[in-house]
Length: 358
Ligand code: IPM
Ligand code: MG
Image (cartoon, rainbow, N blue to C red; front, side, top):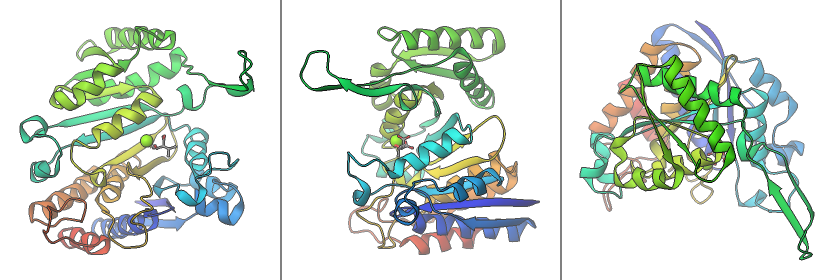
């Protein structure tokens, strides 16, 4: 097939890991006889430096016009001024919103060969396989917010609001439940319905959609504080988890520690139509940027998700995932995964190892 893929390397280690994802996509094209046209565009801090905005119009236009987007990471200390009007993160939030990418899929699994890399005991983490559906274009991130004179006279007060409509809950719940059908047929919804009105709407809607549209899928509700605890104490009890934007942001960072390194975890942000956006869940890691030691596997696995979800190339996606597993089985590690004093590969060498298997 012919496909246009937009690369958004961004900041920090973003360009280093996206370069490896690009190599893998090129290798897939060659091996399976596809033509992927790839073009690179600025987003985040680097775009602020050059264009004064975190998401230049030309980047958004190219993204809209593509079949899929592979993103590295945005942000870094250079732009980390809390009072700054333009911030790298705005680029990411805006592209999610503009492209209607309301569903953020974050799979978290612990591969047998990496059980030792987890900070948790092997008997707790082995066999973990969770698929998070984080709502991505609503809630606190996009609700009404503002700053005004404080009612108590102490200066200013600020507010951010969490708003969800029935339709916003329904569409993410449907995607989660459909995914559960291809897995263990269980969906856990995470909310704070004992306190928040918005969570009560979320829960009512979740239960109705599950009962009326997915009678074959088991479901449960868990409060977010308890979910944070169970994610550490019994992570194997989760299969598909669906939750709102902010809870999902926090829980997926927590969950990312189950496999021991964020360097392994990809994510996909998809809408009801149009291109999806694929990225590693880790950030720009400014502390190691430019050294060529970042783990490219999350981005390589994100390209596998891109092949699967946006290009519908399942066999190609599986080939990439199997290549990653194979190099890990063969004992290759990047610095973040290696045991103390054990040898490890630099970013490009790990990319090469995957290419060789592919
Ligand atoms: C993520 C990140 C972003 C978010 C930031 C960079 C805006 O933490 O993708 O999880 O909060 O959504
Ligand atoms: Mg986050």
